[in-house]
Amino acid sequence: MPISLDHLSLAGSSGFGDYALLDSGHGRKLERFGKVVVDRPEAQALWHPALSPADWAKANAVFSASGEEDEKGRWRVDKPVPESWPVSVLGATLLCRLQGLWHLGLFPEQLPHWQWMLERIERLKAAAPDQRPRVLNLFGYTGAASLIAVAAGAEVTHVDASKKAIQWARDNQAASKLDAAPVRWIVDDAVKFTAREVRRGKTYDIILVDPPKFGRGPTGETWDLFKDLAPLLGDCAKLLAPERAALVLTVYAIRASTLAFAQLVDQIVGNQGRGTEVGELFIREQSGRYAVPTSLYTRWERGL
Image 1 (cartoon, helix red, strand yellow):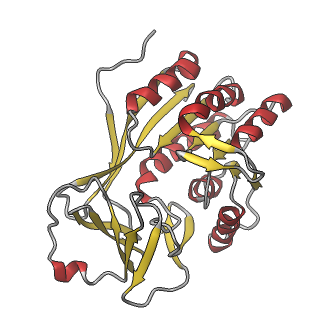
Image 2: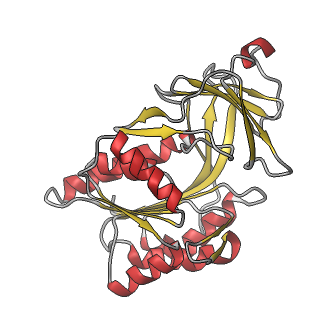
Image 3: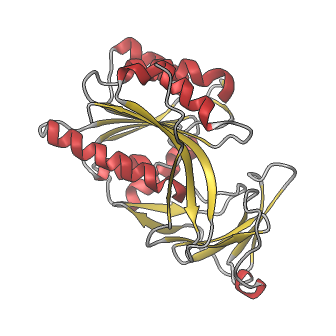
């Protein structure tokens, strides 16, 4: 049965205690991460800012992209910024850092996914009180979702191809005071890892997939979203627990359609569950004026 095209969902938030989108416009966004305010590119902020130039000038640091890609460039630090500083959310503490990329190691627009995941973790715990829900986080980067899940009582397997990202995630684990929590940090190619898990007969209750457009594995493997996502999701479908399971796919690729990825998920795992939710993530300005779209997503579940 084809996926319903009746509506697309919008999943967003107005931030949380340690994060706020202060303003946006003219292709930029002004944000507060903890006590640090940053000014970053945002191509989809097509409107005029609400705050004055004097307010924007209060930013601690301003990111300038190099070339056509917004992701790489340089930070200009106008006011003191620590080497790393904490941002707390949903039981985890994440260390933000300025580096040669536009992001700070934390993606606050993912808050609706984290909350959705926590709801499913609680349902899994209620259904099987003597078992920890098993979460697989692919392309997990610095570990926000993994630490939020483990803080809620889950057992987490976190996979990323970057040793630097895994070390950052371990630093976040220490900052969260979750050193003894059951989380495995694995440096590996996501495609190879999931294939091995299928051969081992492993299953997971929740699988998070947040792939880049392009990437390289730890031993030179290449990742191309449009070529490699379908076979990866095929293996993810085989890893989903038979009775109760959930999967979240988030895609940041520009020139991509929510509908395309939703139909891919629906074809691979949709007939095994009760439905597929399709939509976009967004962050709303602190004032409530406008919302900045950030990514596409598909969420699927069965038995929950």
